[in-house]
Image 1 (cartoon, rainbow, N blue to C red):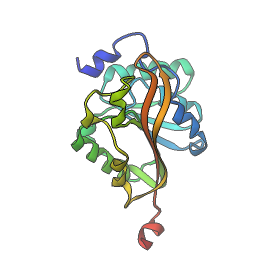
Image 2: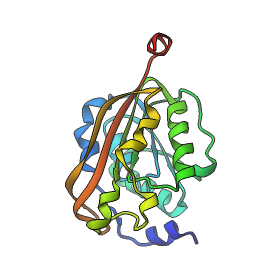
Image 3: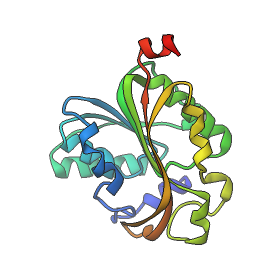
Image 4: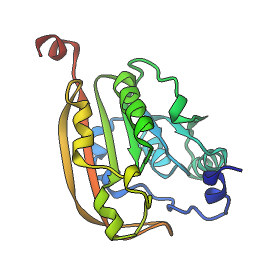
Length: 206
């Protein structure tokens, strides 16, 4: 059983059953009927909420236990999800398939992070949004959730990767309160990023 399977192998939803607060704040971006991909989505709290808003949601995670819990949560809420067991280090990203890609607290080794960012750019339709909230390197001082290794945390500079393909709509680094299940509790140092994929016209002009 993988580390993530072990973490999720409990009746309790360790990150809670409600969506991340930043995701809820971006509800205006998620229009009914959109196709959304939620990656590293764990037990499905954000994916289920998006489905409740009338979106078509595909969820990727490395844990089958997490995917199964997401399916059960969706059933209890009366919505459906498409779930896929995916190792993001080896993911086969479709081209221009999604209106939005969501990644909440997805923390990866550097080489995987590079592959994920490249994949997100590929997978977004022109005009589509990438929405993420992650822990910054400053989170090590708080210890209220997330990895304990600095290399798995983020800096604002990490998101400069998208400069050539996405227009930055929001880039915020700061401190917020998060109370999500038993594993995200308290004052947290985070980075929030929203990028919109450039249209073909914008790309040709730049």
